[in-house]
Image (cartoon, rainbow, N blue to C red; front, side, top):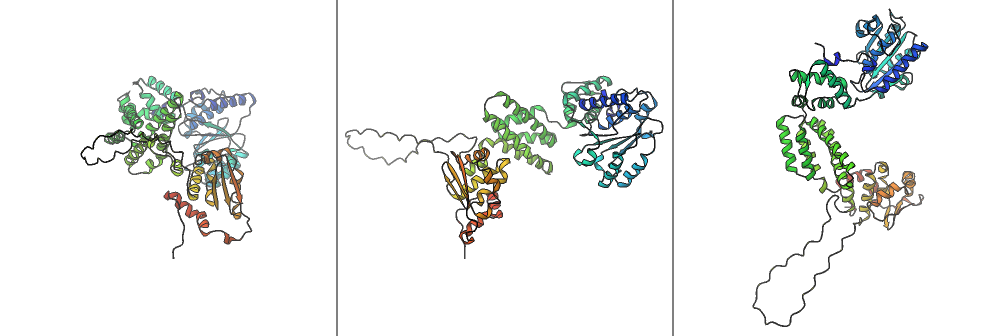
Length: 529
């Protein structure tokens, strides 16, 4: 029995779904070839699996060799068209799997074979699949053929890893990108296949299959074939979820709601339920990330302010950062539980820059002064004779809110400035500058750096960027009111003895890394013994 992926494989350019740009370019090239008799002799189809690369190569072979061709609409009944349907038995359509024939000997054999004229077709078509698997020597041999091909030879290369194909090859071929197919187009194609096969489907079942295909039409058709078999000739939503291990939308929304209110107990219970259902943790993780992405879009469109948007963005960023841990761990449930509980508590956790600068906890409401402590009750004594009453003392006025704390010591200032620069992607290369400073002073509104003369060459970028708005904005998060950064260097010819040993220790990369990993700070450096 023929699988759906093979039965509904595209036979014409018009059958290809989601590749309109490449289809239009190839159709125009075939039209010009019909009119002028000239055709390009080397093509490279690049894209992810299941998007139609090999099918398009076979369609191109039919279009070039059709008795009515070259044409974008081959007849399908002439001998060359029928031969293209079974390339394994055709002398003039040669399919090569580069994954199994990657040696230089195979490439040299191809160079000799390509000189042979076609048996009965207009062109001899060479389709090389997964061409990126060829060895360097094989690529060099292939390059000689592509540079000066005989007039009867056409090369169609296909790859899923375009970056692994040498530039010398890419510069001599026409490259056609094959992109991921949108979910809506895959769903429409699946609907057409079900109608042709007389298969009934319900609800969102086909949508789930299309999403599981992840942009690959072949994968989606393979999944549909499996689901039809499991559903006894029908496509049922519950059967799709069971076959693909998809978690119910109700459970995913429950996890989202628990994260919104920080209910860690509900999250642990949801993980227990998932474990009892035997759900695939990677699939659940993907569904959750997509749900977060949708929620983030809703928050961005609502215009309710940056606080909610930032909160959901921080949680999504945390989930994405744990994806590798989930993939590599032998205990995926523990990874998921830990990530969800941490995400639920994010609103109560301070960002690293706030901790370093001693500022208030991000996302938490500022603490207000509470009522004064109640003094202990004094032992009761006999009432004294009543005298003149004194006015009751007035309560002290409420204390003014404390201003943001500025790092008190030079070491705290060094660490805070280094962390602030490290948090900005474009400034990470400058994060070592504060630790190299022999003197660092905050004289509002100016932050003054003084460096030894022998590091001036190393700090050229920092000296050049000292007035950059991005650098000033990053440091202003540590030092409110910062307006300028001043940089000075000592005379490089002054004797090295003027440098203190503790300053040299602070500049040691290993010492700086120890401080960063431990989260500590240097209060004093002294020599023992």
